[in-house]
Amino acid sequence: MKTKHITPAKAIHPGEILLDELEAREISEKEFAIKSGIQADQLNEIIKGKRGITPEHADLIGKGLDMEPTIWQNLQNLYELDLVKKR
Image (cartoon, rainbow, N blue to C red; front, side):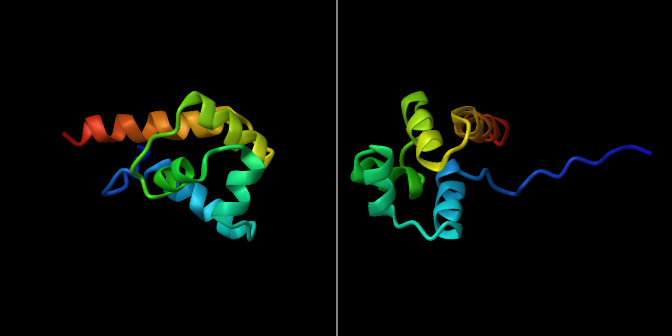
């Protein structure tokens, strides 16, 4: 039996996933900006999908959420790849 791969209709920006994670943990954007050390305006742009997650951001997000930073960098890479595929 062939495995079917499901591809979302639109690429999901990692900022959307970050927002979901913050909401699940009941952490406000402001609290997370302070905890992670990411400038509040940059964090807001990431969450709104207006800014990508840099390796530095991935490291800070990972530390702030007690997760591996590579998760966040991989999400950014997958997002960018999806955008290229959809051209």
